[in-house]
Image (cartoon, rainbow, N blue to C red; front, side):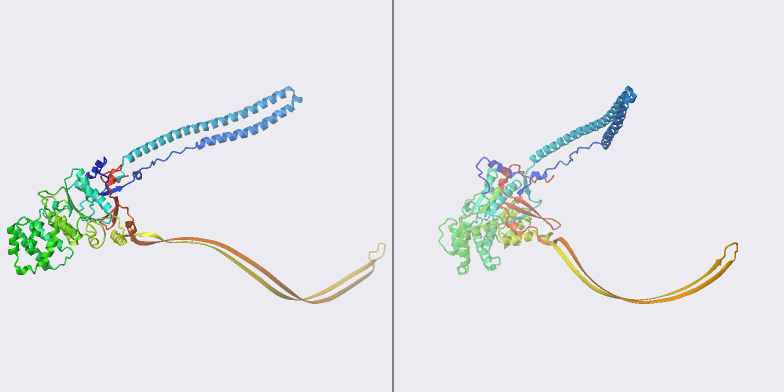
Amino acid sequence: MTVQNTEDRTATRYLRLFEPGQRLGWIYRDPESLRSPFLEPEPQRPPAPVAYQNRAKAAQLRHEESKGTTVKIGGGISLLLLLLTTVGGPLMVVLAVIAAGATTALVLSAGRAASQTGAQLEAKTTELEKHFQYAWQSWHQRGLQHTAAQDQWIDSLDAWGALPAGPGTRRLDIFGGSQRSREGFLTVFGTSTLQQRPLIVVDLTQALVCEELAALAGLAGVPTDVQLLPSRMAESGIVSGLTAQELVDSLVEAVYAEDSEANRAARALDTRILQQLCGVLGADVTPARLGAGLRALMGEIDDTDALTRAERNRIADDLVADKNKDQMRDSLLRLASLLHPLERLGAERGGRGPGYLTCIALDFATGSASTELLGDLAVQSVTRRLASFPEAAPSVVLALGERGVQRRYLEQLAAICERRGAQLTVLHPHLREGAQEVIGGGTVGFMKLGNHQEAGIAADFLGRHHSFVLHSLTDTEGTTVSTSVAKTVGSSVSKGFTYSESVTRGTNWGNSDTYQGGFNPFPASSSSNSGGSHSTTTGTSTSTTYATNESTSRTTSEGTNTSFARGEQRVYEYAVEPTQLQALAEFSLLLVERRPDGSVAVHPADCNPNVVLLERVSTRPLPYTA
């Protein structure tokens, strides 16, 4: 069982499961995820105004400059006056002292100005620091108050809330899971359903998954009717309230459950035989009386008191002609064999009616043939009872076993529930064969599906979506080194021819006079001469020049390149991978919600009823507000 011992003092805490609101499980939400951060920025320490800094710096510079200049000039003047004391006497000394005092006064005055501006800067800085400290303390206090308020609010929030069934949900199919997980789901779902309407549970698992639901209902004071088949079939009411015709139809349907295309003649013959027996039995038609009537019809000895002597004689002698008994012997043997284990069915029921919670469960106290027949008969009985239910129809939970149930039985039950406005919930242990054919008829939930094929079918039902995934990463790094060598060899020959010619011509002339002494102005003698010269020079020269040159050049280049490329591609993949469905925890439930636009929303939940024992658990849906 998933529920802890209901006898201990914590049992009353399970009664919270009966609080209003139909639940399929629990959703966990970390309250810390809703914490709102303190968004007010931290105040920053303001710097001193630039004007104050500039004044202080300027005063300091003036002080330094004045101190150096004044000391030099004043010191020089004082020194000079002291040197002149030999000439000026005491007057120069007095003047030197006055000069030194004036120099000191000027230096002190510049220092006081620098100190005042520095003090003003410091005072302003102190004032700003006080304002900053006050603002920071106020900000810090508001942060602490915000954190305290958030802590108080977070502590008041619930961590677990209910996963509600959708409004107007009429059909719910849960696939997969183990016996414990289906038991937990039935407990959580069943207890919350009982708060709203009556509930009928048909448990065909042969594991009594409805046991803890019945135990908690009894603890809560809910009228409960538990019918165990076949160990306590005498107290069962699956045939109570059925008319003779409904009982006959249910028995024939159960007999031919495995073959929906069975010989119609055989089914019609079995129906006619049972109807004829019902005509003799009158209004008191029970499986025990039908079985006794079949034995009487076959001529077998019957020592029970189910039939009166008159009824037995009429059935044996007048119901069927002797020549027809041999033809229907096979049908009589089949019906008698199947009815024999069921003759105690409902014998001790009395006038007890159904409970607010009715649990019809198969156990392990019989062979497989009788168990299957009782299971089919139970489903048929619930279907026919819902069709004629005088009041508002109750909710129905059908927990299937490994054998399952015939699809037509399930469809008949679903059709009756839809017509009567009853809610139908079917727990399928597997997603295969018949279960695969009915998926999507209503709201769908998935528990752990260990088989990979079943997980693949569920993943296909959940659908696929497009997404971008990393396709490739390319990282390239390279270095290129290139070296080139060039060698040049050359030679040249040059020839030259030179021709020169020069011509020189010259002419010379002269006069010569000879004078005598005294006052004679005339020359005594006179002579003249003239001459000329001519020369021609011719020259020829030839020159040849040979030149050879050789050069070598070497060039080297080196380069490094790096590239990184990321490639993505659009893929069409499962909304939920099959491996995720195979790896679900035991009590995990994925509820599938199909939206009007065709998209799929999956709501994860936990269907363990022991969650209600934890702290900070709400039986209502959590408000998803930040």
